[in-house]
Image (cartoon, rainbow, N blue to C red; front, top):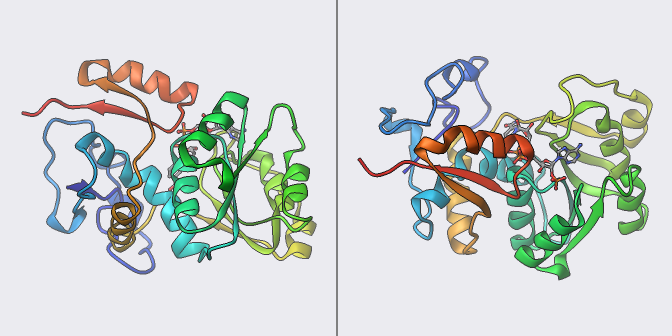
Length: 257
Ligand SMILES: NC(=O)c1ccc[n+]([C@@H]2O[C@H](COP(=O)([O-])OP(=O)(O)OC[C@H]3O[C@@H](n4cnc5c(N)ncnc54)[C@H](OP(=O)(O)O)[C@@H]3O)[C@@H](O)[C@H]2O)c1
């Protein structure tokens, strides 16, 4: 089974107090040998996944899925832009390519861009090193005939949101997921207005979206990309790894009790 993060958000639009029932904050978190959760807060994990693999789904994968499908209404043939090669972005790239979209991935490391292509398939993925090309939005425009991506998953936050606006097509969608570089931003409004950009805040997803995602992951045999599995007694090292920036996901394995 998988637990849902927003433990009372079942379907449709969220209520105003969903964050009050979020596992980990303020409710107790999931790094536990035993958890008691309400039956309404559980979904069946994909049959094709091990427990370690399924443990990566409730936040990173579901956020990517909801951003692409429920918010972005992704269509085959469209272009999706993802930032970096962490958990959310790799899942978004895997899901988008399985759905027939093309993906542009940015990363600080050429080796990570090569790894993404190896994992997902180089025919559907293009990479941009955002250290080599700090003005990476121009590269995105070059790769999309000047149009920009249909959907951008912004995990970086901060003032880079202005680059995401430039890299996203007119009337495109930016799923504002993360804040790796900052929780505040100086947003330049005129490009947002002229490009008629939708910037949509994302806070994971309802259970119904999780159920749809798991069917899709099973059908397409999508396997989570796990950088490393740590033991329960190595939790601190796992969180250090996470703060360094993993390739895909970091897992903490809890021995069967
Ligand atoms: N709103 C929500 O529902 C929700 C859900 C999940 C996560 N989040 C948030 O989303 C963010 C990403 O989560 P995650 O789990 O994917 O993180 P993660 O696995 O720790 O990913 C970190 C990766 O992001 C990339 N990165 C770092 N700074 C970047 C920058 N300035 N520009 C582009 N890429 C950059 C790096 O990739 P390279 O090493 O390849 O450069 C790094 O490896 C976090 O802020 C997290 O808190 C929000």
